[in-house]
Length: 612
Image (cartoon, rainbow, N blue to C red; front, side):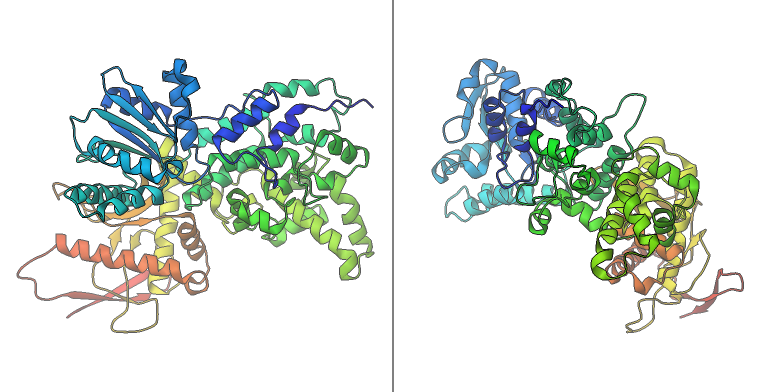
């Protein structure tokens, strides 16, 4: 069989997680493309349009912030290449600063990375930079990349100087800190667009995968004799999508990354590139050389050693040593999910006993190499009873964990919060699919048939957590608590009346979508009689808190899950009660009504009112 080495494999390795990876910054990635004579990976600059709008239309400076690998320098380079193509030889400039003239006559100062600028240059730019942010008539605009800490330290240090401009530096520092805390991009008292590149859109994830999977150099593999057996090509085929056919693997990766982002586990663009490369090239046989070359891919195919190139294990970084795996955020995300370790009896029965047959067919018939071909021999040995001691059963246990990971990435989405064959049962976020459907319903479809049942479950979960009673009430919310000092987290006393689920003429519950954090918020909405309608406190429904309330609503004991989650909902109750009382203040109402709650015969909450 005749094999042809594709230089694309070596080029992609520069984006991978190996110790020799050279893709530590934008400049190194460009250099790697030049050295290998490869077309660069055309990653996206999703906020480039916003940068152009701010500078050319709004006439304001732009600061790009975020974590390492978010594409700050890449955005700036793309901006410079697009609008000043005759100045490419000047990039990246002396000491990381480039100047350019704008159409309105002002000068644009481009700082590609604040951390790379010398202290002397930073001091030289300080006054002009501050004026550009605070004065409308400034003759300069700035385009700057800096992470949050660098940016705040720059102006905090400047504010410690003993001169007349300290107040301006301190003002800018305070405003930037407030904007970063509140995720604000603009403020009326600053001439600034502050763009946090940590918020990666779903479309960006797909574009990154597409840039790697559809690179034109893949065509060089067409004449290779290993076309049908090459693990690299096989792994690529499992991720490829067409307009007619979706990849279950890629779809679940998207979902996992969305859920992680909603839980404030942001994955930078550089790490997304690392993920797709590791899925394609990951090789677990030699952890010190964890990526395939064309030659090693040939050997794995000839020796039928596909267990080392398993893309589902590669997605979790299982081809890497533990310390390297945990050092890369994208693999830590899936490690936090517990993929491969979390399971239930139904799914393990499906894997070990091949029952039920329809689910078995769904999981194993489509893709054989990493499914039945790897697992069936070990499963048969297990059933024959040949695996009797820990040493002989260890390969079976390892293979079972791999098949759980594969099942997570291949089982179809569940459409019920209680589907025990759901792929999300293989993670700590058993209601992850429900959470993502809620986000889509709030952000895209506004489907009442999705939102309302989940709102009912949230109310039931809150009622159970607040009262400690296994109530079935899901149409009214009781913000119950305790009387006096006690360590008991639950209470059966409510100092305000029950809150209706959907009656908009009174206080009622509501789920909204936070456009900045891109996740749901639960709040008590004021009735329409109040004008203007006041902003009420919100319960930030991160995936972990949502999981807590869903599990409690479906039978788990509140105290057995998360003390932190219970503290969050208790704080929400306290601030909401205070806000409601402020709106309902009455000067002649000296008697406070207190409701003592009990569980009725059908699981409903019954209230007995007393005056205090």
